[in-house]
Length: 455
Image 1 (cartoon, helix red, strand yellow):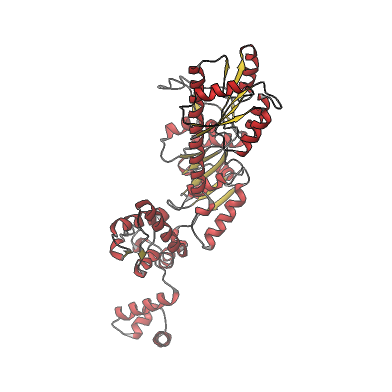
Image 2 (cartoon, helix red, strand yellow):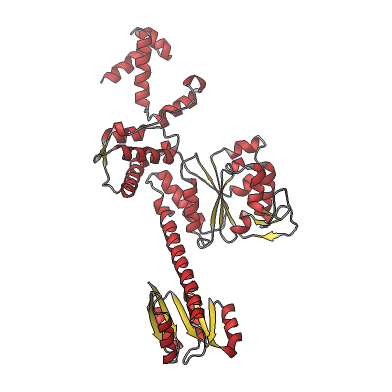
């Protein structure tokens, strides 16, 4: 129910207002003067206010000023005498929602209150949604206790309090947008807009108009003026995802915005100032692209003032159990079920999988497992892992093979040595001398290592 504060020194007028609004599901508070109104406003949760301008102790303008300073989202309706409309107009200029003049009609008052109630409800909904977003996109929701994640959160926390341009790199599915949102919401710009733009999802011909906007008649089909993202997000943060896919021509114009904080709409000549913080992200090797002349060197150094690399999931496998339990609890809440347990075999499967799709792939696998598991336990038959689509080993060099074994398959040095020796012996028909030659060892050295493995 909406809490309405009525501020009126004439008892009869307060009673009339309350009677006219009695069927509108309002919980009404009364104040006889401005000082009492301010006390009630500060002690109660008031959603809207109706106040006369001429009041004892503190006037209506004082009440309006106090409300605008403490809770500017609360709509204030001014009641004024017919001869004091200039004062009401001044009150509107200072932030009042609307005004009615005495003597007012029932329809006028009710219409004004209904509109204010709509504004109050919408404001409450926006604040609720904002709080939900802020609780979801915080550093606390970036799951992990590995040293890599701790370092990333430390860096992001330090840079969030500045306006420094940030470049987040990492494979798809590692959480680049989540980190960028958390950085924004922990920054002084948190009350401003956060606007993500996927440079890879927008055709090159349209990306320029999306970023800078255009004037009417700028090109065929431009029938009216349109603001671009730089103009819309002024005061907030613009997140440019997959910036490595931005065409060179757009890169040049983007660089100018970074340097001058100004731009022109397509087809226009007016210079528009913008106050925007840039967070960029990519899964590409921008340094390599600079060398290949497919990404501007000056732009690269301009956006990589504060680089943060998010490692792929296979490089921080200690976080997999924590992430898995987090997602299981999340889906249990969504599905209205008790969280199932996971067998040791399932956790081993998850920990050893290469996760080419990173956290996004892990989340999808566990969502499917939750749907398939009807009981209170997730087993290996509920977990469907996609096969890796990497190049065949014959197309990889030795360094890549070693990296694949260590990072993707978690094979240690002792295990690699054991497998190499066993394969050589099998290939040589258990002929130790021949196996030694295959491994580049002397027969005595191979025999020594065999004896060591048998201990």
